Amino acid sequence: MSQEPAAGIFERLDETVAAIRDHLGDGSGLARPQVGMILGSGLGSFADRFEDAVAVDYGDIPHFPVSGVEGHAGRLVFGRMGGLNCVAMQGRVHYYEGHDLATVTFPARALVRLGAGTLIITNAAGGISDRLDVGSLMVIRDHLNLFGANPLRGHNDERLGPRFPDLSQAYAAELRTLAGRAADAAGATIKEGVYAGLAGPSYETPAEIEMLRRLGGDAVGMSTVPEVIVANHMGARVLGISCITNLAAGPDSELSHDEVTEVAKQVESTFVSLLTRILEELAEEDSRQSVTQRWLNP
Image (cartoon, rainbow, N blue to C red; front, side, top):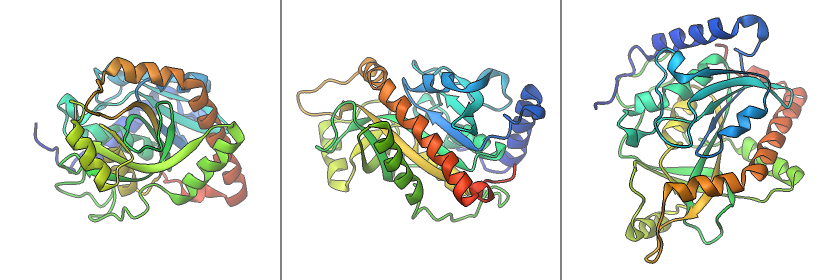
């Protein structure tokens, strides 16, 4: 499947946003979220805690791709938490499912187009660094794009963002600091590291893991990087968090998707506490610094 050109994405985004707002009704305010969340494998239940929650199935949203991966519910959930209007994706589509990167990243673009100027992007990842154990939470400091492709390849629509976006702060430093404060308040332990994004769907060989270690990777997964690129392209701030659900391949290890989802469930309560406190910190930041000026007008 070839890479979808950027031309026309802006119009499709507007159709998607209009359909969502028609479904929710503008009067609720939910259709103009301040924070968007992309919830990875086994982590989607966080959105069930939203106040005044309203869910929309991906299949009912124009142009929205539907995932067939176990552990990804396939719903867009709107609601309030921590004093903020939020929208969360319960599940995402992946490059390995056969989609091009324009399709994979379309939902992330839709969150920003709806008004979410801050995105919290989570994933399940394999641990590479000796500092990370199964069940650890890692705030992403930077990434390695090893997908062999870039979602911005092709025609660039300046209404979405610049031809050559700066990724020197792809993961906003102030949000990483905020996450550290939130972890302290929630009694959670988090570490920072570099996320290596690969195309999948096969898990990495021991030689590939050694390569990633030498390149500076601390964790590895099959998502997140394309979404982070397009979010930065559109001017949104990004906070990335990995849940280390397994140790990446060694010569005597075996990996399975069941292991990934099972560990994600085990650390769910810690992850929920952390995300809840992060949203509270964002609300406090809003009141202190009027960060609404940063949020994009949909």
